Amino acid sequence: MEAVLVAAVSVLGTVAGAVLTAVAAARSERRRDAADQREREAQDEAIQHTQAYERALEHQRWRRERRQAAYLAFLSALGTADRVNQEHFHTLQQTPQGAAVNEERLRRIRHHFKEAESASHTVMLEGPETIAEAAHTLVIRFSGLVQDVREYAQVRAAANGDLGERTASVHAAGMAFIAAHKDFLAAARTALDEPA
Image (cartoon, rainbow, N blue to C red; front, top):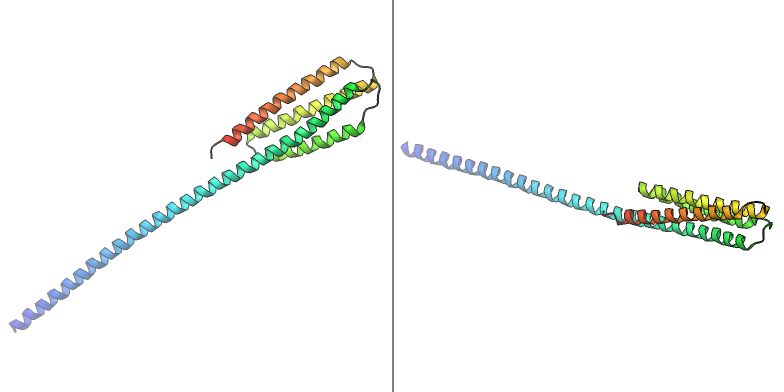
């Protein structure tokens, strides 16, 4: 009987040892699985962070390219309008007083001005705010220059006003336009050089 009891205790000890070993192994496996899960989650988070950064960087590049294209389109349209306006003014200076105002030229200037003004709206939408303000100021300055040239044409056609005063007014408006143009270019360079 003693032998049976010793055998039973031995079997129970072996079973208890096996159960404890299995429990310890299971706990160790759960800890390993949890650690692996945390590592995978950390890797996934790092990948998502990197992808989000790359998307933001790509968006910033895309935005810069759109802004640059908008700025160039605006400057090109404004340059065309300015050339047409300058040609008109130089032609007026060589035309005898009392000659009729060339309405077709005025329509061309207005058409090109409207194209430049339309391009400025894209610039204002693309921003940033400093560029929107500079573009708005530039359009206003050019509008003033166009108006002064138109008034010069009317005074020259009427042959009854002081052309010296009108010429000075056109010159002052032209200088204000040039200053606004330089301000816009400086602001545009700054905006395009901003780091992502």
